[in-house]
Amino acid sequence: MSAVSGYPIWAIIAALAVGTFLIRYSFIGLIGNRPLPPWLLRHLRYTPVAVLPALVAPMLAWPAATGGETDPARLIAAGLTVLVGWRTKSLLWAVLAGLISFYASMSLLP
Image (cartoon, rainbow, N blue to C red; front, top):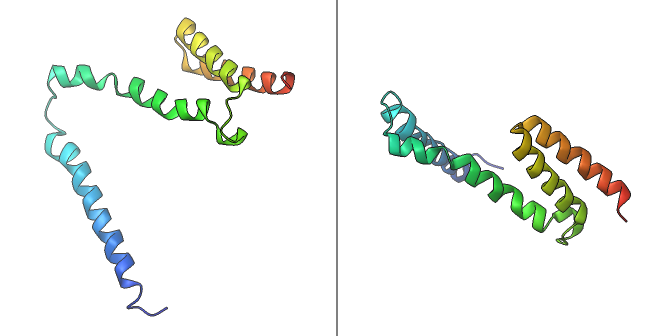
């Protein structure tokens, strides 16, 4: 591989690095030392609540491990995780309950 053939890939990597830096700098560098308006802070509180279910739902409904078939063990674990998290308000207990219930139901269900 000659030095000329590797040039386009490095130009793309450099352009993406500059673009990523500018996107992040626009939020952190330009408005990082200013207080955000209360209405924006109120809306930003809901970001994790919106993103986490969007990441988990496809893995729950169409898991790749089962070839896209819905698995009762995963549904049981998800339900128990939500229930324990809601009752205890603790991420640690919710994750532990989901983990234990998932492996217990995997070994007990056919």
